[in-house]
Length: 484
Image (cartoon, one colour):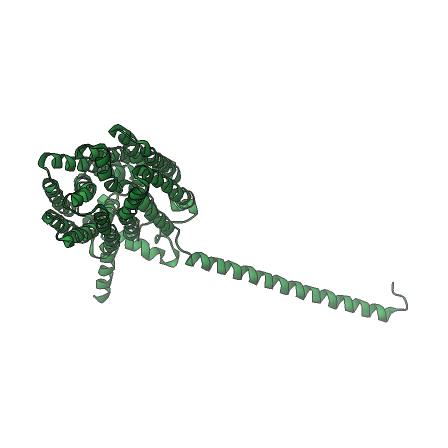
């Protein structure tokens, strides 16, 4: 083909061969570099996923806000209470029965709320609750008769708050956390303290805008705060985000973590049961937990929370001053909720006893207040009632989730909260009735103190530590085995 030009032709073929070899080397180098970049990117992505904050903690943060603003709308009633009595001239048992109605319908909804979350998911359930709570507060703006408030603040707000509050949040936290459930629930209940701490802000709203507009403002705040966090944050189960329960299936520690959770179990036959409401009905632990929530959270807490500001005004304190001092109880509730995390080390029963002692001592000092000459007693009551209540509240929730577990446990949790709400419905009205019969709050506060003591005894009989050890005691056993 090349003819007489054979030498130039061979040279041309040699150049082409070298060119093809160079292209092959360049292609290989580019491919290797490309693969290196891809592997490096994947590695960095994996590292970022490893070190990213677990999404369950965002749910805990959302729960804190819901507890703060949602239950703030309930417990601010103690600020509205004296104002409503002054404007309408109602007896105290009638006025307090508005809050009793709220808690009654909260309680009637509670057995179904956990199951509704299990079936429909958290966002649909909690959006429904937000709408009902907002309507209940805004419609209270036009209240004139007791039955108006029974329907608005009582029925609508009571049902709405139940679909938003502790029942669905406890179910959701149970789904997201195992190893750090005590800490997660403590932080959620930390928000409840801010609900009590809202007293001065609500008192200012009433003094500035009047009680009617104050109710409307509360309703608008609920929607503005809750709508975005429910939509963007509150997922019912970690699998909805492609995740697993915190601490159970994470990397190379998986086997050790699962083994530690297994060794938490003390009563293996109890822990093996997938609990449902009919099964729980047959156990003494279930009914003791119902008694604790009825007596401590329900009657005791709501006798005091409903009537404490009216009592302080009766003995001579200014309303705004009393609201400010008693709001300290809210901040101490927050500290108590954080303090309750120590139960993951020392045990639920021991930590609960500390909380009960604080609540009981605060009621004793409340009974000693006869006038406004010793304001330090009001401070003592506010600080230790808030601190003790903050310690006890997450521990009851932790005990419930330690004892009763399973995919259909929502109704069981809901019924225990139903008992709390029945006590809460009785407490405000009963405290007002005793005031009307005796002319003071002494009998009501004595009954609250007695119920507080009985709840402390009942918690030891529940004995959550005999079903599952707290994580700290498992670690202590591991250390003892190592030293041996």
